[in-house]
Amino acid sequence: MVERVVSEQEVVETIQHAPWDPARQGRLRATRWYPFGQEHRGVIYKGKDVRPVFVEEPDRIVVVTVYVYLTQREESR
Image (cartoon, rainbow, N blue to C red; front, side, top):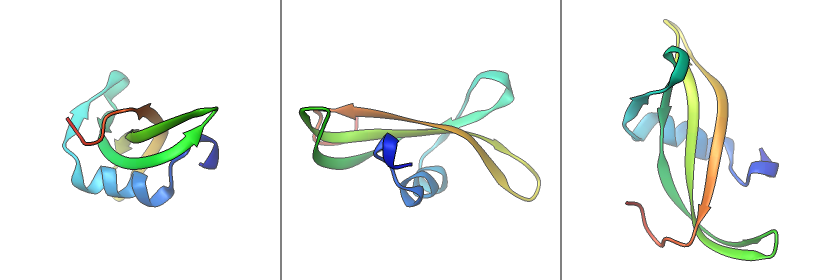
């Protein structure tokens, strides 16, 4: 997940602590802001929104993909 500037721990925390919203094809998503404060492709970003898309099965959660939106915001909306 290094290419997406997100850790597995951030994905897990987002699913555990952020509200779940419906997504396409019966999937779910959650979004949580994290401080970033690093350079990525020549730009320094203050934070990032981590948005995993996942499916809840009876005995586990399967992550389908993870979107990361780098932002200049200093805190969550």
